[in-house]
Image 1 (cartoon, one colour):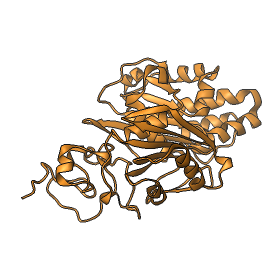
Image 2 (image 1 turned 90 degrees about the horizontal axis):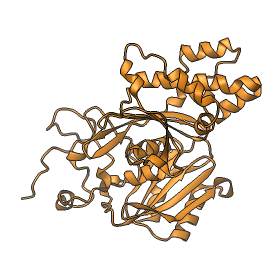
Image 3 (image 1 turned 60 degrees about the vertical axis):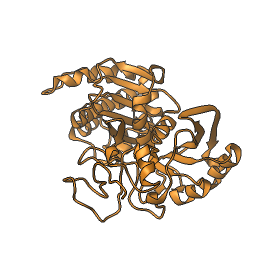
Image 4 (image 1 turned 45 degrees about the vertical axis):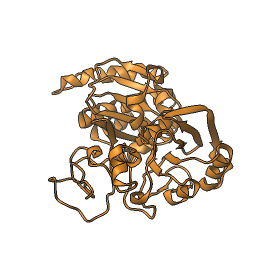
Length: 360
């Protein structure tokens, strides 16, 4: 008789132990889809998630999307001794590298200009032809993952898991690019970040990653045992709060529809075009207001991390002091938020580090 797992495997949602679900599982923890543990091998490969790796009750990690034509339940497991293709697919460039034995091989890095490839499939085919066959593929893509498919936010490309599966006989995964940045946080070295405000990050606390680049988004991450989870979000599509709207009106600047239209590359360009010398200061104040709001909302006692080209450009110049002064103001009624460490992610391959973390 085959032994049963010590805890029931939940197929969808989280609730009292022992209640079986007949629907397909849409989301699992980051470690499990590639689990190569003795227990998973004993049960047979590709039989579904190990219950010990599930996220916290009520928390759904955005690693596996809603049911798609690519069937994750039947794929084989991935072992860290195998070779994986990692990719960071942005709106302008696509960066790739191989991961071997759990380490990114710097000699295999490839960067493609998206404008040189009409479709993502052509770009991927070029990379596979140059790097050779792989045992798994994990990609971070700029856009929300839905049904195993991404229609990119800032590029007329469609990326599908079913196509990735034609380029390898092993597991394939797509995650949002900000999800990858957030997954990378626990693996970042001191040289991968610029600490803007020192603090004492809680080793068990959740963290928050905020991206200001071609677009805007923010996503929280948290630990659960030896795995980690990141929530799928699209904060950039949310409307601006009254505090930021009032600040813009006071500066006689029109209020954009959402965060993505303000705290992004096009938002900064529009502000500079309309306001000349005052633009960077106004942008920095709006950025700081948003960060304070997000700290209240997410309580990131594990640290607040910024990433993206716009964030780097702003925080490498005079606007840095504007942001830090605003963030140093009192946090009533939660003064402990003043101790949250704030860092700027400077590693160019942070998304690849996140993809690699997803293979554990």
